[in-house]
Image 1 (spheres, rainbow, N blue to C red):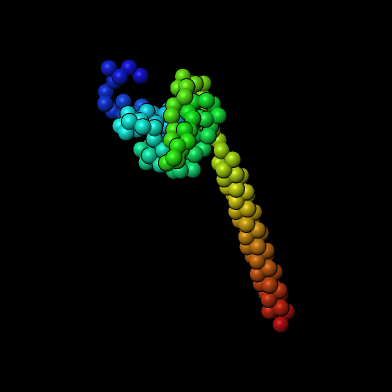
Image 2: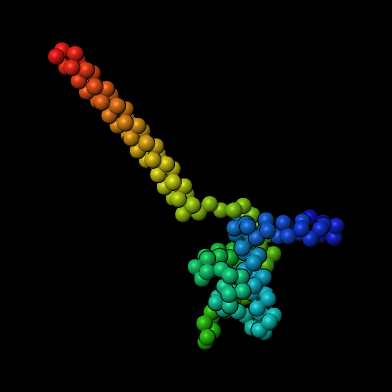
Length: 153
C-alpha cells in the first residue's frame, strides 16, 4: 500500500486486515516490537507480564508465541534475580516465519464437533418427521376403522 497517496480510511482498513491476522509472522512481529518498545522505555529488557500488558495477549498466548520465537532463534529469555526477561536475538529471522494463519487443533476439533452436531440435528429432524408421518398414518387408519365400524352399524 502506498501510504503517501492513501487516504486515512484506506490506511485504517489495511491496519484492520493486519490486526485481524493470527499468523505467527504477524504475532511474532508484535511480540518483538513490544520487547523493543519496553526496552526503550524502561532501559531494561521486559518481563513477560509487561509484554502481555502492552500487546494485550494472554499469558498463555504470549508463552506459546515466545516459545516458538525462541525455537526459531528470534528471541531469548535472560534469567535474572527478578525472573526471566526477554531480549531480541536475531530479528531478521522474523521474515522466515510462516505468513499463513495457522489452523489450530482446537479449531479443527471445533469444526468436527459442529459438523457432528449438524449431522445429529439432521438425524433428529428426520426422526421427528418419520414420527409425524407414522402418527398421521395411524390416525388415518383409526379414522378408516371408525368410519367402517359406523357404516356397518
